[in-house]
Length: 264
Image 1 (tube, rainbow, N blue to C red):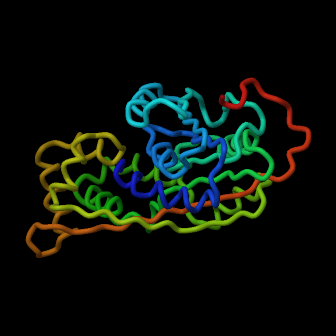
Image 2: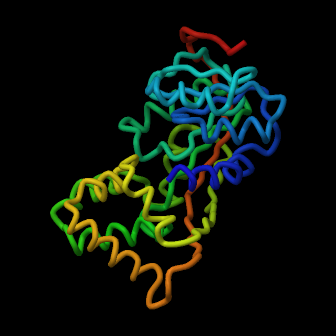
Image 3: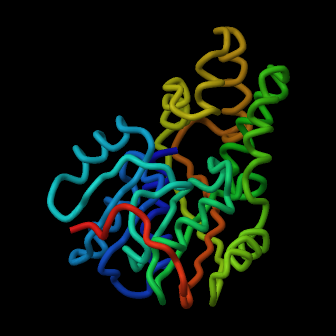
């Protein structure tokens, strides 16, 4: 999924930011996918990546390097920055992981200055991810007992652009817009897709990797047949779609100052 995220990040940035920000915060930055894209797209911006997992930030630092990028340990529900510290606050593929969405969005709005942008995106897990849909359906056919946890995780995601819009408008953000962002990945062969599934780095791949050998082989066979049909193994492409939403911060009268400050 990391390669899909890398493909999505530039189009999300184009949607979220109509011009280069001075200070940009990436909440839930993970291993730095969005920050790396922002560093390339906005060469003069000061960038901050925040994530609760220190190991992710250490890895992000090795990829992005030092200079105008800072990495901070923190939760989106309790960001360690002052009011209006940024003019752009973004979140790439984090929405389905947030427990208290109302509080998280309130914090994103708080740390964004007047006229600034708060934006996020999430994969369309129900209809826009043919690869994940195919894997889930094959898993359900082969080992239905292990799919319950995956279904619960999917249920926590936003279901539509209109649902995202309502959430942003309820937070008091203005000029709310939504979009569908499509990206395509090409694979040299079926094994090019299959090999990462044994790494266990996502809930789906962890499920596949933990299967007994016989069940894993059956999943391999059925998934290959599902994606390639009767054709011989060879190159193929898959598309994925994400929901994206952005809103503008209006007047923020009476907001109390929080600990922390604008990054220097």
